[in-house]
Image (cartoon, rainbow over the protein chains, first blue to last red):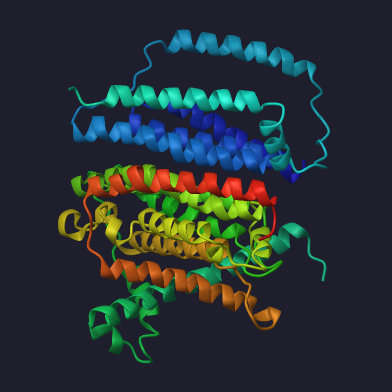
Length: 164
Length: 329
């Protein structure tokens, strides 16, 4: 086993454990912390696949951005307003059945793939390649996403406006 | 000498980390002396034998021997982990900073992005501390911190992206090389504006005085670290100063030409250190000159002034780069 494989298994265990903890822990704040751990672990998976750009973006947007906003919401509602929010999993059994079905489906594909895939050679700078692709063939998609974000922003402004 | 690359990386990282810890300890001394001069407080002039050089060591020893108090009502795990979660990103940001050509832990080709991404994780440790302490003051402080970080992350990133665009690379060493002709702070109009925006956003991101509502001594005692004592307090303090120092290094690298300077090549790291300390002193200077501003003022500055301004600046930089072609100054 190479160092890389060991690293992958360590990250995989952390990722799985923290993801399970997100849905199983009753304490909402702890769930967010586990979510942060899961998101960082996902970033490390990207890093193990030689994608440092995706790793950094994952940390910046998800672990740094999304988690912060979720924490903000929880802090505002739970501790300051004084209402205890408890996260419960009422549909634990149904959820487990759906998850198992999805797992079987995904595993069906994985079994057919060769397990020991050769490590793809990194002849090109993937960061530059992502940049070229985004502003070359996918430029219109990128612009459309930008428009979508602007619409979302305007929507948020509309909801937050003062009633006059 | 042929060491396996993993081992030599580990050795370099170990050296950088330890040098850093010493540097951080003495930066606190520097700040104290500087502040004392500014405010004519004679204590820090005299304390300690040779000009107070032993003070940081005395501080460290004292903090290590202090009792470690864990509040009974605290969220134990979260409370105990918070200082570590806070400290690690603050030390990790130094990983991509090259102190001279070929002298750094890892000169990634996404260096600047890595710095920004990792330093954004610091907030997780901060609100873990604020929440885990189960203390009204700590929680309010963490709330304010989250508020402030959401507001100032974007202007900080946009300001830091201006040199990236000018250099045409996110690699730290490439950004320095691109400044060989002209430091980016001297770049007409764009450079100065971006540097000022960077400094203001830095002050806010480091929660230094005009923006230090999250530790506002007069209302929140000491903010999110109010319940921490002994070594845990020391770790938080260490993380905070390491973050400040790291951002100073980043500022010196992005705008002041990093290790470039007159004299032989071996002077490079010293030039870099001097520039970083200069940025640090400017930040400290502001800290000890201004008064704290209100929350709404802080948010207003970010959303109504800094964010649009840095966005426009970034657009203008884009036009300039498109006109003259990327790379080099």
